Image (cartoon, rainbow, N blue to C red; front, side, top):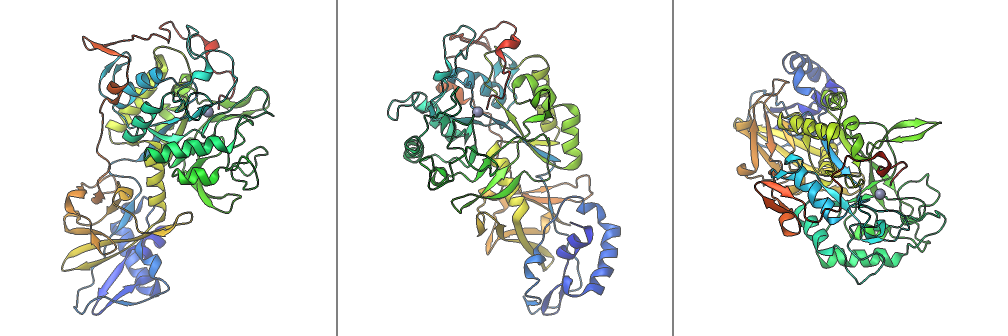
Length: 508
Ligand SMILES: [Zn+2]
């Protein structure tokens, strides 16, 4: 979007009885553009949307009967909440997770407790979950060879629709936000990829459990090989049937009823992007969003896809160059991971631990907002499709959020929760009011920000408060002793992780 178009969409004049959209008056607009480009050019460094776009077809609106001087209003949407330059989520697939691994990993990532890997990072990092395990993968999840791949963390026990496995912690962690994504409805990968144990009955049982427990998953991450015939969203796929109503494996309707709106469909070797979401039309006629995840470093004919979504590649994923690149370009990024994919103990060590510390530093310094996948995608959607208008009255600027014009969900008026983090540059935040339609957003939900690198102050709908509660206390087998964590169930090894334990292939 050009600066001229942003300014065009941003400026309004209050003259006498009318509120004029300057797109209708190119000469006036040109003069003001010159003025603004001299005085406020930097303020429009971010992609901005406004207001007036929605009024073009309507032209002039009478809003009041009072004469005001010509006062330009400098309203523009800041791409990310202040003071951040980029937004990042670690989007982890549930492969290889056990409850103990989950607890150790997220106690370190999400809390500020003392852990075997040092003081927890206190970051908002979510995970995914399975509801069923129907794989035949040989081998173990732990170095002591106690836990098989069939015993991964899962809501139900293997393929039973009545026996529960980790239902209680999955419900709990989903409610507190540590789990926000479905990794399909289960792990149905078979060694013989032409065979499958999947059936719609599993999806139905999962959705029943989701509804009974008032859970909601907006993020769907397709899992596994061609045996997972319930996958959907990738139009190039030859095996996916989850969105095919004529198929016995049709489940897209059930996924939607579980809340699914964002679907990860395939590999991507881009680290950051201007936007991660894109509309998809499914074969059952419904629309949803696809989203990009950084999964690999490209493809070579000799080695195939160079997957990097294992913790041992965190240092490559979260390299200094990568982090600085998204800050500079003001981009979103979802990095794909399998945080529980190794039996190594501790899960993060060496360069990979350093990479996570580096990410925390970028967050603390106000450069990269690290957040859970569902929040990032929600924000991305709102930021991309928000429509507003603004006006000045009695020296007060009012910004009205009219609606979200979403190509998937349609036009709708957002809730306060959906708007968290939305930030507008405005000349005087203290003299700016925010409304959603006719309703004024309470002042306690807003925060006024100092000028950022553009020189412009801003007003923001408060982002979610930081939450570093240690939710593992409810389920952890770990004991606190002298501030250190003692592992009681030691089913991971403390030995230096051996490369043969690591994934050698696409571990989807
Ligand atoms: Zn997977």
